Image (cartoon, rainbow, N blue to C red; front, side, top):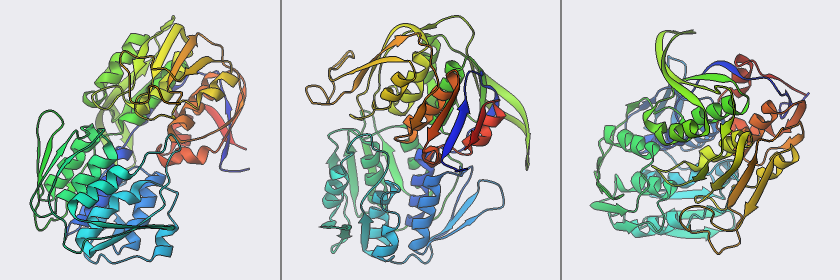
Length: 451
């Protein structure tokens, strides 16, 4: 038996109740932000996922004392004794996450230098880090590239600057925020990302003493301060995981209540979910689990019976339809009558997972053309970034190899919706962003076991 191959017996509607905790795309960044403070920070509702463990390890290497708090999911980070970490130790984490790039600004402020290893993460496109490096240079950083990674110094300190991103990149916006808050002077960032996780990171930094103003038209102004202190923060819930379970309910003709999910950050998804034919209800459920008894809100998602409707969608930066929502939803769209269109405009290589769905009986064709309402930055380039899904398709079991985090959960949903037993290889990758998914599957009545 191995912990990386899951036998999934499909064909059973998922029914039951699960809970999502803090957003993966906020928690890891808030942990990095703790480096900027001079007193301890406390983060609540932290999910037990691989990315959290990676950042916890990196913080520990740099002298931050990270410990579990009194309550489940509570993390306390004490940055009092920040220190340099050896290149060899940092390189142990090379390839396991893309988070290390965000350590640059905080380490330059705390130590005057930083080393960033070769970056990992999901293989869904090159995700060039030139936005990050150029922004750091604008602040006054000196970047020396070496075979093992990048060495950064700030011989004259970091100073506020005016920046405009060529694309509203979430990662680059986080980089600017984490660097600008303690840079001397004022920083103005134009064409910034404004995702809910970005807004929540701004809330974290403001709690630490940062002065940040969010203007209209994607303009963020940061007034640098000399010192920051620790924070106490409960992150927004993970809207990606919530939508993934919603798609699973639709694909398997089931009903799943996702405790912790919030309507406000999922409005765009909920509109699409309704257009496809799914139904949802905002709930307040009585919950009892270790250490917690009371009422907790969430969203119940279900397939109401009958046929699902085909839709045409384009992914986009917030407030558009999130790129991380598309893979799980495409599985559900294989069960909709007619032709659905998915135009991916954020990552150029994010439709590779559809090959596995076709092996299971789906009918999906991918194209280099922009099949959405407007041309995107991948148009006229050699990227297959649009998909046409014909349905409904009867899915059958297959052997599946997970290529990346979100595609991996999509493969899992497909296996759950298919007739027969599928073997899903590389499921350990799902642990990067989905907490305790095996027990959640069990709670929903899924039949799956490691082989």
